[in-house]
Amino acid sequence: MPVYEYKCPKCGIFEVTRKITDEPLKTCPECGEPVKKLISQNIGIIFKGPGFYVTDNRSGGSNDKEKAADS
Image 1: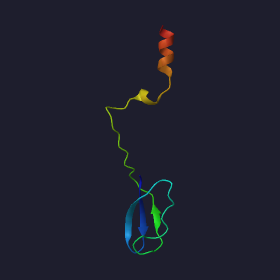
Image 2: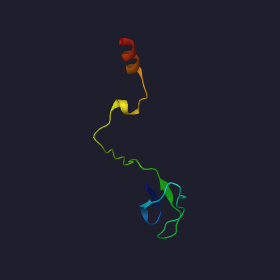
Image 3: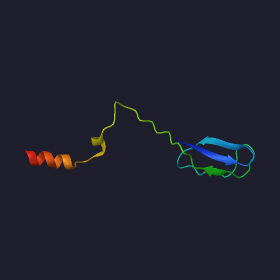
Image 4: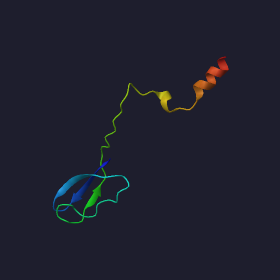
């Protein structure tokens, strides 16, 4: 589940783990003041596995056409 940052005028910045489908918080869970949702700079993508290659996301391309022409 994603972690969202909110800013409360009294409590400061805090993080909340919520589902993507959940409604954003409107009030601080500590003091009840209205909060603002912050847009984070870091998104924390973790790449796992042996590696990633240029061909991983391609569905055919210029290399396929060149190989066919050489045959």
